[in-house]
Picture 1 (cartoon, rainbow, N blue to C red):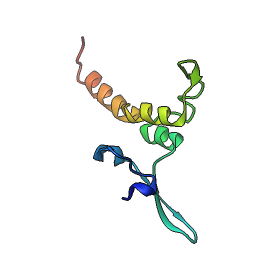
Picture 2 (picture 1 turned 90 degrees about the horizontal axis):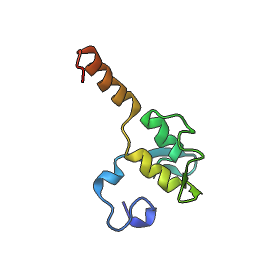
Picture 3 (picture 1 turned 45 degrees about the vertical axis):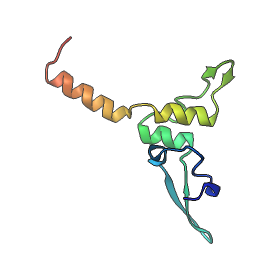
Length: 93
């Protein structure tokens, strides 16, 4: 991918390209793009408004900050499955 496509930047690591959206536009063809924060939230199993209204340093989170937070999270269905398996196995602390 060319850096002019807006998908890469200097110093970007391969793992930062793991989740891209391929979308077809009539008359243009296929376009590869990063997911919006809402698309990323849905993919991880969170509600659409999960990060809305959260302040950071006196300002609401911007889309970049939301994307970083979602990207550093555990997918809700995966975490729930792991915890359910531990509970079902009778593991107690």
